[in-house]
Figure 1 (cartoon, rainbow, N blue to C red):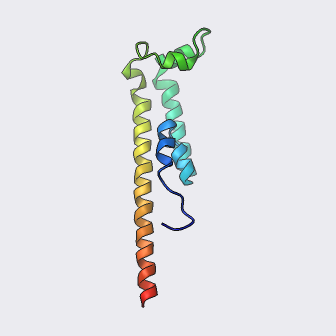
Figure 2 (figure 1 turned 90 degrees about the vertical axis):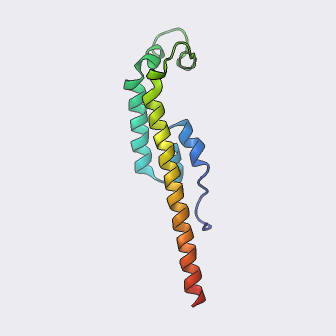
Figure 3 (figure 1 turned 60 degrees about the vertical axis):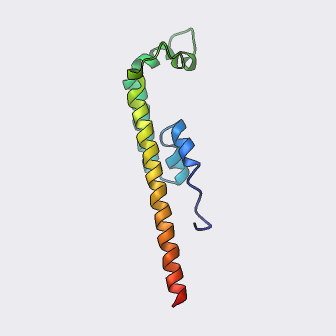
Length: 114
């Protein structure tokens, strides 16, 4: 690992919180924006039942969303799938960066030994 590169592991919990945050941490701004927009659209349009209580006076949105008896799995399946695929994307980016760093280190060793 080079001195200027960041560790990849903080990107995993960031991506688990909100899709796109891990990509922001890694400096992949376009991907971060795309993941965040997809996640936001899925939350807004595909989980309408869990968001229906957000604008009604009474219980706050977080309280109604965390009541598992009021929220069905089908209400949150698509946003959860987007979040998991985003996390997989961050993992694959980390693998690629690690492989590229090892390849660069191996090339540096070969060029220094000759």
